[in-house]
Amino acid sequence: MNPPLSRDYSEEEVNEEIIHSAKAYLVCHSPAEVFARCRKGVEGSVVSPEKCEMDSVAVFKCFQDVKKVPEKCGGVFGEALKCLNGGRYCEDEVQEYLRCDHPAMRVYEGYQ
Image (cartoon, rainbow, N blue to C red; front, side, top):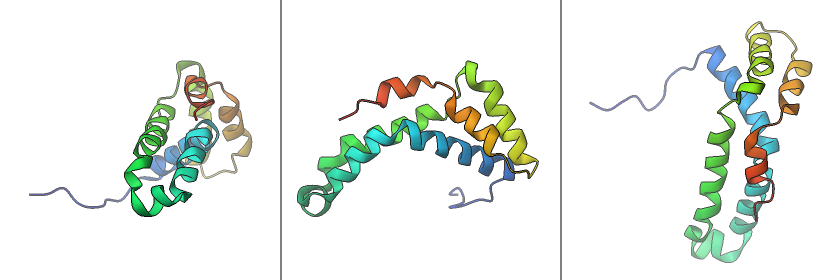
């Protein structure tokens, strides 16, 4: 028996992914840009896409690292999630979380 190919996500799970995605957009910008440049090249996009594998792994790992909310950011993350789960307009709460220093930023900011 195989697991289902898709499932319905709860509103809270969707909201959590939205917050993580916004943070990853900031934190993972460098590896994502390097990966995109690699894929634009002839070898990366047509001949040997595996030449970009290291960069794609870095983007994936960065996103996984961002999903681990550091303790010092837990409160503001929780407030942003609570706000979104309440169906309110939450730009201030999300921005507050985005400003919270994440250790992954130091790992990936100089990625080349």
